Image (cartoon, rainbow, N blue to C red; front, side, top):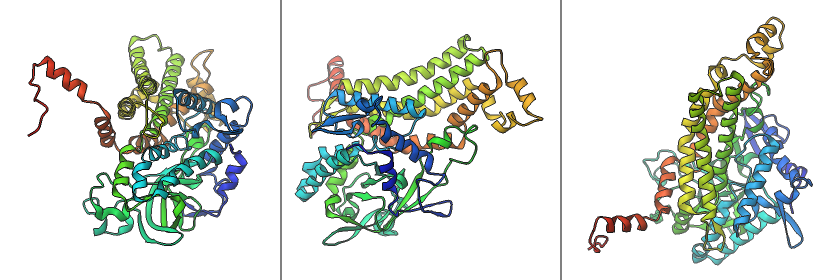
Length: 483
């Protein structure tokens, strides 16, 4: 059944080992670096119980309510329901968050599509997929994705350096496999479990079989250590950094120090073909909610830039409108790719409704690769005051308050405080340490840009363009044949 916020918080008090700023965290739910984002995830759980949101954020199956986000998509309505639910969440929390579960659970659906591949090595592993997908639905767990390994010297194979640079199996036991290594993962310290999978690209060498492992890791399991980067929450006041203090999703180096993975939590092991399949199909569903978030980032940039133009009276200038149109085209380009990906969706091997792969992956490239340029356009539209405006305290301090009210009041409608609030929001969205971190995250959260392009290349059907040019250029029918 759908969880409550308190049940989620109680699940995090499991003795997990979490470190941040040289401190061992005893309770992540109360620590200032984690509490704001945990409160956001908790709010999502509670929203599903409230009358205003219940029917959007949950659905009924066999007399039980489950999260809309965790429902395996079998028809177009399931995708639009997820989009509607996310819209309600973001409008309620007044911001954008990425790693809250709905954009990573899709990786499990990709595994479901490959269960026949997994069954080749051991039928139990395929059955584990079915059971875990059902468990995510029924227990409403906060499920994240264990991403990239440290990798070490990438010019050398794993066996020629410290083997722990990539997660690998060190031994088998009657109870399960024991793994060592580490993974970088956002939100692991305050999630329930992670889908751990290999991140090497080719997987053509059986010598790598010890690294070909996919499994579920419980975040509070013995041997799991969360070493977190410094948080952005608390570095400045809420008034000066309204986004960083509420929506910082803390990234973790998740160390796996001889962690036992029970056999029922293993999806594949010593199976390089399975590893290859997982890497090729990992984002076929999860790319949709990931890219959808960038549409909301675009909305925030459009809103901040347009409010600034209205405040300063520049919204009538053609040059300003042209730059605003660039932001709008970016936003609507994302929307068009996502809309068409569902409109043209196809049935997957497991019977799920899979977004049109070429359209979805092209949309991901469009959204991610253009984000830096769009952020710069938004900066231009917001003006230089986002980097020179004093902090909120200066607007309340005798000796500076009067001068700041004088120079930041624009007219009868726009007084200094509203001007300051907009500039602080735009600074945190576009210019702050948090803004730079989020931009880098977007570029790598679903693999680097060259992998995005490879996914487009592999998903696109070249047959149509090839045949069109063959006819238009009067090429021979034998042109595509190889000796």
